[in-house]
Length: 424
Picture 1 (cartoon, rainbow, N blue to C red):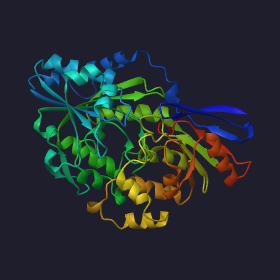
Picture 2 (cartoon, rainbow, N blue to C red):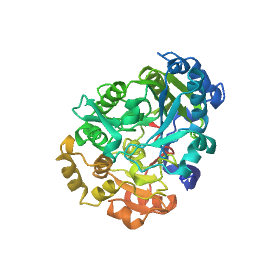
Picture 3 (tube, one colour):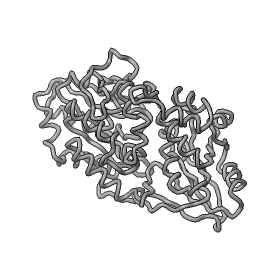
């Protein structure tokens, strides 16, 4: 027997498998990467030698109103480290600048005060001006233009009214935007629901270019870059993280050039040759990304690439925050998988329902695969209603999977399904 550990909520789950059943363990080389400096030093180096841009302190000179966009509670951005350095750099160029930290929620709920303290540290929460994007408040947004897709670009007015806009974030593979980070801080991060919804339309998600690791011809990425340029996003600072959520590289500078450099780094250290198994067991990387079912298509899509024609996918996710978005829940419980997909395919881009992309991804996966959700925090009855099978432990999930695929079934383990690019 072999014993394995897989991220789950704020810790991990351990389980054992017979040697004969284990076909492969896919882990991103990124997790074993050893940087040549500490986390803070990596960020300072990136800011001292930005890619395709003057230093942030030089951009800040003469600027009075600065907006710094950061990620919300669903992301692992190590803002306790990065934010103080970025604020120091801005004030080195403009000591009296009026700085607003704008939390990019997209369509997520508001980040709580306690979550802010955990993410940023109590000192920054007490001292700095912080605003939270609310995609559902029309008064918070201004119309800027139409995007290449034809979508109307409504963005948080703070981004338009400032005279220096920058963003921080982290880069990892993303199953329909190609990669996270960079332009994604703006769209969907600080946009109105109409803009986010249309960017995530059925047609956009269904594009063959809207997939992990692909930026060229990706309609979702193209809209995101266009939007970020239209509001003059002057500077970004993005980091790469290992499995312990530690910074192993930093990329700062021009919106596209710095982001592309970071994507190249992640691509080199995240790609694994896909291995097909009868059973694929994975996770959404633990907290915060596994705090609800709505976030889990990220890992499910990675597992899909290795699950063969009718393989079983076991998804370990705490889901301490429940199923997630109310629209996602309503869609997943609205009918059969085939009915859900037909319904979504008939919706024109401008009528896109919030969170429908998540139901679309799951409908695609569930048409071919049995998905077992391994969680002791999410209602088993709710999991069943969402067309998946519940299991409280990895052992229970594996028993269900072996009952379906037989005792000799091969197993592929992808401990962190978010960080791995299972592509040829």
